[in-house]
Amino acid sequence: MKSCITISLVEESRGGPFVLWDGLDKSIAFAAELGYDAVEIFAPGPESIDADDLGRMLDSAGLQLAALGTGAGWVKHRLQLADADAGKREQAKAFVRSIIDLAGGFGAAAIIGSMQGRSEGAVDKQTALAYLCEALEDGGDAAAKYGVPLIYEPLNRYETNQCCTVADGVQILESLSTDNVRLLCDLFHMNIEEEDIAAALITGGQWVGHIHFVDSNRRPVGCGHMQYGPIIDALRSIQYQGYLCAEAFPWPDPHEAARQTIRAFRYWTGRPE
View 1 (cartoon, rainbow, N blue to C red):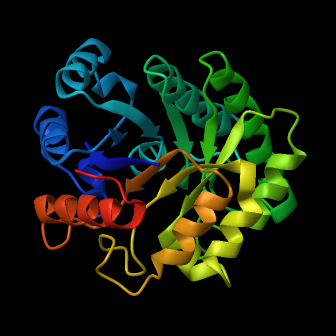
View 2 (cartoon, rainbow, N blue to C red):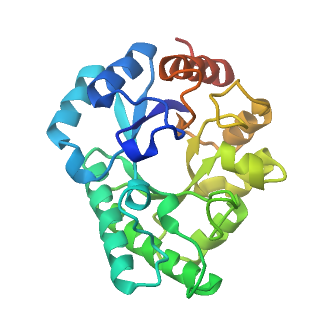
């Protein structure tokens, strides 16, 4: 398993669960200094990142790009994939594809989380789910061109009513005609929704494509009451070899949150410094 840390460039999300906020250059350099393997970036849109500059920063630091989030599509641009308006849904899918294109150039995945939307008003649950599946089909096919999966994240009940558990996520993915979508299992959301986090990861099995490595209170690993032994054992049992990515509040500050996470990563995975 490999280490990863989140960098946010979205001012509208300041105060949210992203660890580093000092821009790409400083954040990537700091992540490299601490020994991380990769970064996950939350950007306002593809136009906010110069791919050549990002490539130079990553190469200089010896880091990989693990993933790009699409959440700014909702947080900043108010686009979501279950919108009652067909035109807005198309705009949302186009935004996702634009992130896929940017990430794909680095061999990285795009993540759909908050953009999945919810059933409400004129959009009933069955219709909202159909819209989501349509978008996952579209994004999975777009990502396949780069040889990477699209990553889909079940969220807790307070953020969506589309899909809240790993088992429900597996059911959605198995219903698709594309086999190029994988699940992001976020330990914070799972702590709310799953009866047994380790058992849920085993249920996810081959569909588990990315992990948000965070504690029960959304602080860095080791700052809440999450029990990580069974979680790491479950990941090993499904032969997970992807990223454990810190998507956590920058508590007590970004630099200490980053340090605490890499210490915890090394402890739980047995990775040397």
